[in-house]
Length: 321
Length: 263
Image (cartoon, rainbow over all chains, first blue to last red):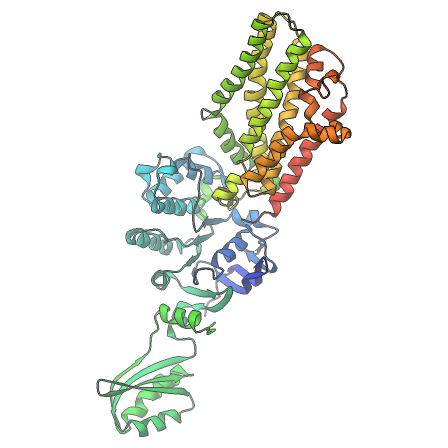
């Protein structure tokens, strides 16, 4: 196995309390370089609070956060010099045009040369398809256009870490697709940490996911592991015949934790939960086909992110990997 | 990322980080819009009109009374304008979310406050002090034939500027302390108008508050600016020292509060 990529973002017991209400409860996160880290949670879960803590826009009540190994309170300016940030509801100076806004944003990072800055601004305008509106004042921009400008200004400095707070919110399906494409493309150069409530997007582009609920981290891990199920694995079996005898045999296996039974179109369906998926893959089907039943379907259950999300958010389960 | 190798990176550190860019942006609000000439026209027009009308209507008015009227129109009314102008500078940005956006860039909070202070101080100096001052000087010299020496007039303008800086920094500080525009403008205007009553209640306050810089209290004592313009010794230099001392204190409080602000 190769070495794990370095950690870009790390939080330890990060806590934020507003007027006695805990918005974030002892959050421990590790985001590795060049990952696309999806940060999920219902409204008010603490996603934006976490992002603002990482950027030093607010201070933690307890715990600590570091980005590139720099402390988010003491060295926040140095952190922001390497970060691109899209706020949840991007607000810019209304009297400026998109081009002026991008120039203004770029000048926080680059002194010159002016030609290179202008070229970068043009490139960003092209990327978000705002070239034809580049010189219009922002007060005439729609929500979607502002969002696209927000994405452009977040990338103008070639950030080592891109933090996007609900990047696809207020975008139409094509805009959403474009944002996801940009994020996928950027993975080669940068780390993307983004919050969203659009589960489909997360499943499409993220490699690591964290789910936050009521200020607490309730699930975290590589997306494949989360989708494979939090507690080992589940195998789905459709069968006919003497199912009770087969069930007794299966349940006696040391790697089986539970067998849930149901009926479907005259067939019995099982959901066999196992703690050792490799043993189950090797032996479960063998046991069944050698027994008094006919197996008509056998597969490992694949979860949708929505299943996991609903489990942990509504069921209060903790499925951290 | 390697893409930024074609650029010359910003190297400023500490409180200066982002100051240049912020200043350039704030200056452009004054000097690349119609703000500078509108303000210049308003204050130049008011001073020119007021001093000119006195010259025309009351040519025999003593110089001390003429400069007293100029002092009120050049000091008190622009002070109110400064409060109105500045009340939204921080509160507006905090409310609209632009402050949070700017501060998500590599910018120090000191630079954010200082850029507003420096840019508006310069704007006020040119449009509310220098331009109307030049207009008033020309009217005094060529219409009223009152030869106020230029250096004395400049000293008077300097004191008027100090007065406006006091209200500018006071409003900036209130903007850092409060999130409501009403609180900022209410408190600042309450001080502009209420200090004469405060001084009446606690006479020692006339050494600390700026009221007597432009307006005489009581009238027989004479205000500081008219005294300077007429070559008389002012009733006391202490208010000028007190005001000059309070200006950096107000800026310091604004910065200290803004450093702790959460966005």
